[in-house]
Image (tube, rainbow, N blue to C red; front, side, top):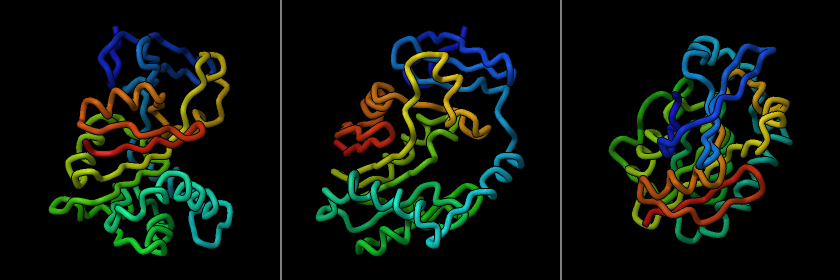
Length: 214
């Protein structure tokens, strides 16, 4: 038996017979995770990230972030002075865009900015864009972020919600990145928020969630 990493309920196996991959979809909250034994190692994971074209010169990449800021962060900017970009990537483009909005921004990334600058700090805003799908222990990371969030502070996440049908999930392009191992539904995020003392303020489109510390 396999149990959900988010709500501990039983899961249903999803088999990718072509790629020999096994996933588990929670029968309660809908969270999907790759079998832990099938995760890529850290060396291969970093090689995958090194291929990303993340720079201020990449107009499409910048536009994606600007839209994310406008939708999820701009409505609360008057309450925000300090921010942590958790999982900033090889080039901290998103952090730079937040700075242009007048925020003081720290960055952390497991591979590219590994110094844990957040350990003695707390923030009005914590962002994590295209990161949570890579996490093997997402609830632990969510607890960590909440610990470093000021009272009434915000967490804004970007990660795509999976298709509801198993066949559609197996054909989903987002799953094909070998480092994408965790897939969240709005309900799974709502349960996570309740567990760590956050309120899910809203979900936007098919990939954005915004939380506030209670």
